[in-house]
Image (cartoon, rainbow, N blue to C red; front, side, top):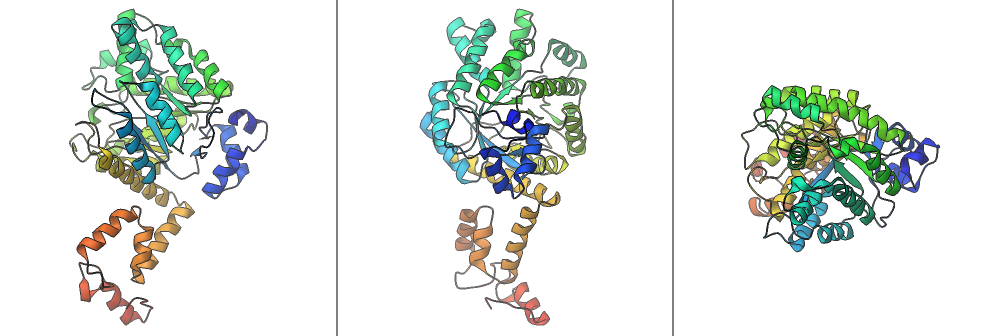
Length: 432
């Protein structure tokens, strides 16, 4: 079954019905969004048992978490622990970004244990295999790359991140403009290295119809990755980044015409004053395609606290039009995150996403805040803790910092503002 083709034919699929129920909107509204391309439902037609997820206009902002094998000390078992921690913390999708080790085993295990959509970046595996087979990634053949893309799609991956819009013209532009951080995209930098070494156009751009053929065969959603994403706030919205966005807009059109669902992956480092303009440009140039943003990070100085940095940027980006936020962990720019940092990163991103949904007027978001506010006013601690975005941490802090027998918080104690005001106003104070 092809979600986009069914939507264009006026048919509502079971996946559309499930998304509608989860989002609290009509199935017809979901169908229209899929037909227009402003909403995608990443679900490989070879994958069963996965909970369908809607990403796009009018829906709750989603959060994605990344895991994967990196370095000699990495293990599938540890990465699976991270996946479970991310899903438990509320991640809506998982990306396996493995660059070394048994990448096939890691991907298949990720698909087996993850109830959410799974995405990959096939170029990572193609690079690793080319290095082993040909001694260097620059000797990768076009067939090597497309064999990996097909292999991953055949395994059941729901969305594929591909640097299809990074062309030789854009590479030359980046060189002429003198970026501070020329290339921070791992896949983009290797792809451009291949292009320069072989003096050839990007094969993902040159053979884009072949990409779409594979995607349509398995009903895989294409996620157009940006090789020219800014690696520092000073490079935000430079010519190379915007030029690539123009190319991505044309690729979005071609994907829709081919019956392929598509979204666009966006920038990394963006100052606050550029976020709204960046979202507006993407939505305009890419015809309303769902926008998948990394962070964005609003400052370059937050090493060790980039989960907070990313949550700030993610909140503003989602308010301005982004549809899914890729989490950032405290280990970003420093090292590989552990299980606790993965959980922390997901929660931080979810706070940003929820703040945006609240600002956008999503009814479900407002009702969640209202329920917690009423519980707080009633000094109903059990309800407050249950409604917290991370009940586990909220309960632990309550246990550590407050007297179990007290209905008040640790800061105010017997001088609880809620109690004082409730007595004066004559309103209920259920726990007093």
